[in-house]
Image 1: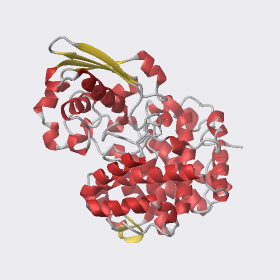
Image 2: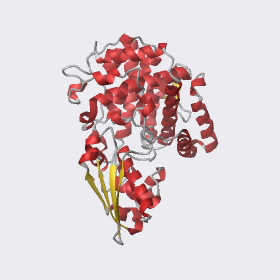
Image 3: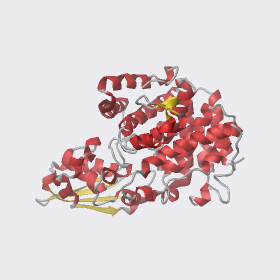
Length: 443
């Protein structure tokens, strides 16, 4: 039996089993976090530009963007998948180096609206998408992440599985949806090594590709079922020929959706351990940013490769700059959406501190990646004091999770400026009661 068929058998069988309350609760947490990241992303490029590019698919169709505009499901998946990944506040499955929510939920939400799907069925579809895609990402591993952006590649499988579930595909057609989307999967790391809008587009394109692949499979289009493990398949072409057995073995016994990381900072997740460590060490030492002579950050190699930009100019670059976000944290106490405004980017205090921040790879911490995201911080002060602190994980990781109340606060913070605080609370209440909703045609 091929790996795609093993995943499809599992995802299709979910329809016949009642999900545990814990799994349903965590799925609702994932949807709330997705919606929180989605709303501010809808009013920031590239989403408004995508609405221009795909105007022929808007103001008609059975889906609806979160701000109310009618859309075809394909356009809604593409636009909202991109929007949910734009402000860098979307969820992470750490072991797969992957943001599942943006592609998976965007595709499922659009199709569920079009099909007038009930909330409980949407939840089951999202669980299917998360469980399949996180395992594919985990198997592909660090070797895949060297050149590929997992949210674009792996995310296509999450979207395809969720949509195949919503379409009621049997295991054979579900497997063909996965096989077809495997050859659609793309997203290069180079696309966000300089200022561009490509990174969020990876999530949107994955959502669109997954939805399309599921719709094709529903109509009888077939794919190469050994697309993952074949001699010229994804595992060999885009990784190092991974062993699929361990990730398949946990299907049905472990739910990865219960082990998500929810972001506590509005930037690249590779910077979070360093931000948390810098804030903790600053508090422990009782020092102001002005009294710091030097900050040394030692962490895993991928953090420096992706977020090592020493001189960011734009907001997109700054979200992937360890010096910028650490300087922001030390001067302002947090890294939220306002950290990337034009005035913040030009702030002389944080720019000056950036020049005093040094980055290095810590071999021990690098060896623990991706299963652990840690950073070792040293702060030296102008008066000669020095201290070092190890931040072993990130706030928001499974070991230090955001509480439901934390998620509520994050939702109101991000959604309130877009739709108003009162309406944001109405939306939040509906999302917590997603398993009671008769349809999703509300905004």
